[in-house]
Image 1 (cartoon, rainbow, N blue to C red):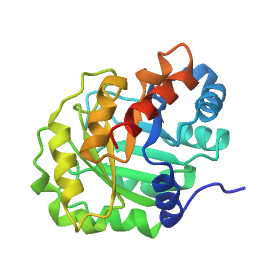
Image 2 (image 1 turned 120 degrees about the vertical axis):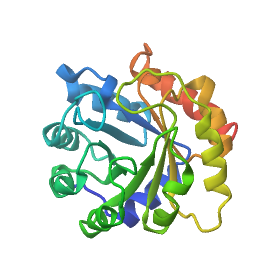
Image 3 (image 1 turned 45 degrees about the horizontal axis):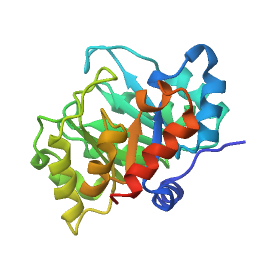
Image 4 (image 1 turned 180 degrees about the horizontal axis):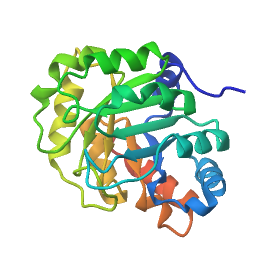
Length: 234
């Protein structure tokens, strides 16, 4: 059974759950992937977030389609694939086939992301565009109408567990205030109980968090605390 969602279904589901907590599987125990996915699903996360790194665009290497496919088999929750890779156009069809519901590419990796965003949408998936902390919002402005999701990075991509950079908050506020931006706003990097409220107040809809869940002794408590902190400020 194909549990992938199309663009409209994904947007509708995530908006209903916003503020939505996404579990970054980078921090899970990959020896027990199915168990970990089922555990965070039971804990109440809205989606699974998978960080794909190629060792070129970012100074780290993680995993590819096989792990996305394994996660897809383990859950019917949305699969949010963050492509921290060079030349993503070459791979988006395979990631969609593996089970990705959303694929997010980086403006820093693709000087003209429009063709890739269009290709992702043509595959039936949701298309996201990410922006790193030092990159000004003006870099993505021409492509905003072609995004279903905008990912504001609050750390430099490549490694988990980094400290939250508040530069993301001003970007979120600016995007939220724009009447021509209809994309979901996602934040990733250092999102924890002490930072998620600020992100929600600034306008984020989706919150990627890894260590705040997987390093907590109780996933359900962790997700509840995160969502409560976001709801209090939303």
